[in-house]
Image 1 (cartoon, one colour):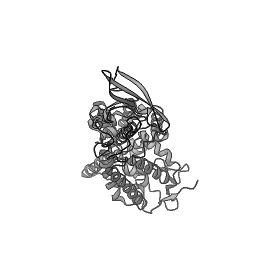
Image 2 (cartoon, helix red, strand yellow; image 1 turned 90 degrees about the horizontal axis):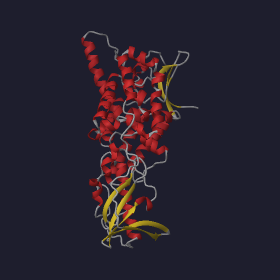
Image 3 (spheres, one colour; image 1 turned 180 degrees about the vertical axis):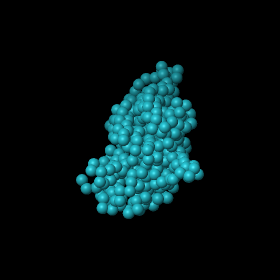
Length: 454
């Protein structure tokens, strides 16, 4: 029965939600003024273009396209170009969007008139500062920071170059909001704690971290890390320096993966935490039910032996699906819609089709532990490729190993397999999520974290 269900999941997964609603470079809300003329101004050796708007032959305002005034400023998905209007006293009169490449489900609200209206009236004396006089949107921190930086720098340059204002009364240097620093500090502590507990096999802390990450990275940060983050870094789309949380997040993930392997997958991923905890709850009641029927239970077995044997027969094929999806996302960004993280933690922005898709994935992850992580997660595929060159790896000591099969049975990703001669066991490092289950259950303590000699 479960074998048929697994095949049903594979078919459903490959046939669903391969194209997203990602907004790739659209024009929106650009005002079409008939009475305006183009002009230029030279400032600090550079020529800047701006537009003078007339109302009955009287200068009403000016506007600029920010791409003409600022170097390439990027948000979550790529360059952002705004049309910013200034009254003749140097205050912002209106803000429209010309181009943006952000993912709708995360950043759609950032580019609405309601959100951008916060900037009306801001000038040198009252500059826009996130978390002070400009509200940020949860889950769209990178986009909010990019928009705020663009408008902030536009105010400064326009007032200096066009209105010749050089008195910075009340001027504040753009800085990192306090709450952003606090979030970043918490993130660093969690990574450090996870590394320590992984190295010293502290079991209960892992579940505390996982539950905490469901709230901190999942709910507060709208799903945690995404393969789109890695894709953006790969193609040089790095957000501004004041996105300290994101830069620290991606940096720590890449560093820990390069040193140890897929620590993020096993300790910090909020979606993996949800599916693993739901599976464990199901497994707990399944054991109680079988025990009540008088059946003999092997508590070291995570899934039914038959299911594990079935999956392992085709394991090498199923595992390649995540690499296929990884490649597709790098070539065709719209395929990012296969990631369910955003749908789980941003439900209010998710349509019914995505919710159904999410429910299907969660149901199968409850039936098969870490199913998404094992076979379908493109982010896991990206981190798996990086872990191929990790410095330290878990290794089974052949002299100590009793070949009791316990480590194989408890591994949630089926990363422990027999060697070709079937006399020893080995751990496939790129499939291991460093959950330490094998080390917890190994009686002779025959699984060590060792430096990998190439």
